[in-house]
Length: 140
Image (tube, one colour):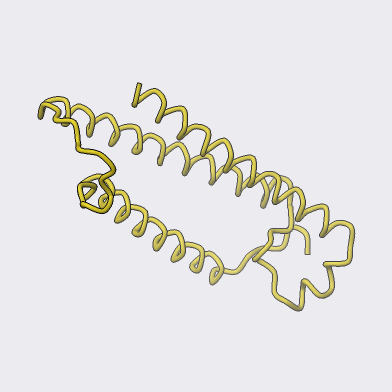
């Protein structure tokens, strides 16, 4: 089971999930950015800002998110390739139920699942910490 090639169907499924995630994220981003003045979302009156400052602010955040998206894509792709090709870690969700019945009691499977979870958790934590850093830089 270690180092087993994944089927093209699994690649297509993950691609569809990522496409749906991207569409929903973009819609949420647009809703928060352009439709944030709903009365039930407003806790206090907005401070008027000059149009030039609004344009600069929007350009800044579009650039930050574009670079963040490209770097995040490269990092997630690298971590995936590292786990699949170099480390040959058994990836959760890419095994059939029959394969898991034969391997889940082995020490290799438990170790691989733990490594998989720790690597993805660390990657996600760094991605979120980077977002916090840009938020701090952009809002101060």
